[in-house]
Image (cartoon, rainbow, N blue to C red; front, side, top):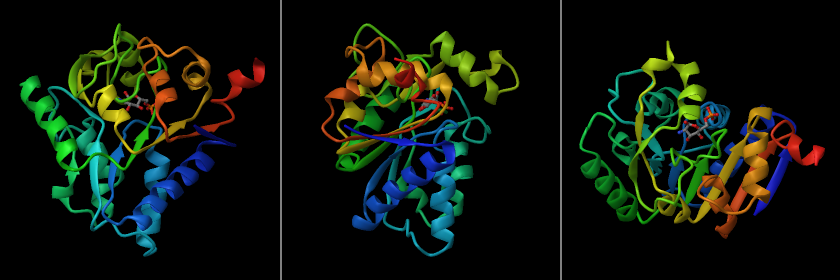
Length: 244
Ligand code: GLP
């Protein structure tokens, strides 16, 4: 595992975008695993900028997103489908048919999850998977649990996740209670993983992820077992290390 300590959110975002860009240049037909939430927004901003400057070409790139709320319309501004269009896809020359997100509009969880798992496999797996982390150590929407769920599945969101994500909605009751997510096995099958962590509210989760025992109660701890993980964390996210 490689750990980069950066000053702040912007430095984290620029470094993350550089790593994603390097992957795209090295293999213009890469499959990128993408994430949502506030953490990757800055990295997507850099990717857009470098595309506008003619540095990056998305025409051969395929993307597989980590997760989506269940029971949300694509036109809903809180759907991850909408998020990806707004933050990246609508601003670069990626082909719509090359972008993939679990279909939150479909209620049949088995169909959505089995289909999505197959799609990842058909794409030949993910070359570089971008990850954020929840305050409770979740990755994608793999919430703390008694075991690691291997494949794409439907989850009941933890109260703490609903609480953390309500900032994007008008009120807490509007936050969907379920989501479709890549499983831990799906995520771990990516050739490379890039984990971004910013802010003091993630300090405990990051400390546990890097130094804690591997446990499904802190899903991100499983990353200790992956052979090619890069973590970019800012000073606030690393504050727990300095104190201990
Ligand atoms: C969300 C997403 C995760 C994300 C995490 C942190 O619920 N499902 O993929 O990494 O929670 O979000 P944020 O980056 O907004 O802190």
